[in-house]
Amino acid sequence: MKYILIFFAALIGQGQTTVEAKELTPREIYEQASPAVVMVMGHSDSGKGGSGGTGSIIQTDGMVLTNAHVVIEEKTGKPYPRLSVFLKPARVSGDTKADLVRMVRANLVAYSSPLDLALLKLEGVAAPLPVIDLSDSDRTKIGDRVIAIGHPEQGGLWTLTTGVISAEVDNFNGVKGKHVFQTETSLNRGNSGGPLVDSEGHMIGVNTAIARVAPDGMPITSISFSLKSSVARQWLREQGTVSSQLPALPPSGPTRAAAEVPAAQLPMQQPIPAPRPVPNQTPAPKMVSPKSQSGPIQPLATPPLPRAYNLDELVSDRSKAEADLDGMILEMRGRMKER
Image (cartoon, one colour):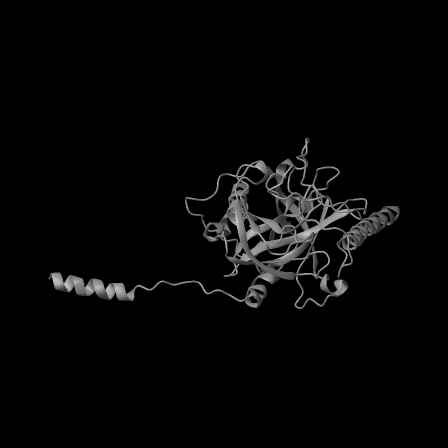
């Protein structure tokens, strides 16, 4: 009997195989993840000024995750009254007029300025949208290969950049529960809110901040920061809007995120100061490295230089289009009343 048990145990042991996820090439990751990456623009009612960045579709019904500083107006500390989201075309040609034809309106569901997170809901989505898997970042370690997809100024739309995880930082900038990855993946203004993706094609971070110039003017390179997806998942569950499509995290998940603001409370009577995006048509503020930090790391920014597309012009044009549309609607309503 003893030998029979040993025999069956050996058979069971032989039948057990460790299934390891396949590592994808950057091309495979891009083809899989980029259709779920969007461009996000916030606009004022006046048609002047706005902000632009990147977002990720995390639910087929049109839930988009991005940075709070992309959708919060710096001057008022309140959400932009108008949000436009652009879906990826079948082929990115480099012609912004052709690449940005798939525009949809969006509504702000919730945001957290301390975590620099915002959740948007696309309007009028008829068909299921492609999504990116918001995975568990606890499996990601220093040295792991990652890519970023976004719209960096001086680059093209839906740009792919590659790198590795360089470090991990808990309670980033003194915000409890704000755990981030440091990466040397190239990020610039316009990447704000976009996905950091691991070698299996899973989103493990939200690209949030960079360090480019130290207080003494010394240039800093390859220092970028992404909020861990585990923090984003915890915050999303607390909003009560996307839990049905987010698998449960293991018990060792991150601490509870702080200072979430549900959409029901917008606009707030005392706005939470938003992280400082770069003002339009002005030089970027100096960045601060973690080692010589005398103030907060700034949101993704870059000095104005020649570029493949002009983010400020795109935002301004979209804002003017929104204002012109409002004017036309008001004029038509006035004519109808006269009749």
